[in-house]
Amino acid sequence: TRVSGPLVFPGLYFTVLFAAFAAVQGLRGVRPSAAWRAVRTRPALLIALGVFDGASFLVHSVGVLLAPVAYFIGVKRLSSVVSVAAGGLLFREGHLRPRVAGALCMVAGVVLLTL
Image (cartoon, rainbow, N blue to C red; front, side, top):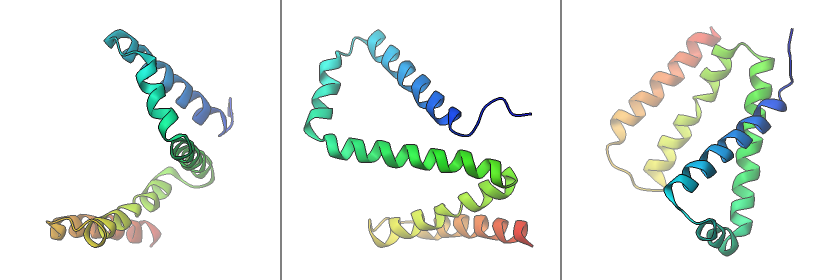
């Protein structure tokens, strides 16, 4: 039996993560005003990043419920192909051959899972 739904974990995770980071920053003596200054300069960007990160985490949580975890994670790892392509085409990163080989290994794993 399930104790909670897929909406509980992302909310709890981000709450605990925020509290932990805030505690560490407080112990390090970082003043909150420095962090809020960054928030005030680009609020729309930070809100958009938060919304997209939260949505991706929510989709992940629901996906784990809908499919066997090994299959879900395998398909999710296909995003590495997009990352390698973006690195090579958009950011002109070097050493693409080993990165492409690794991405193709992940694609082969997803194909094997499918078969």
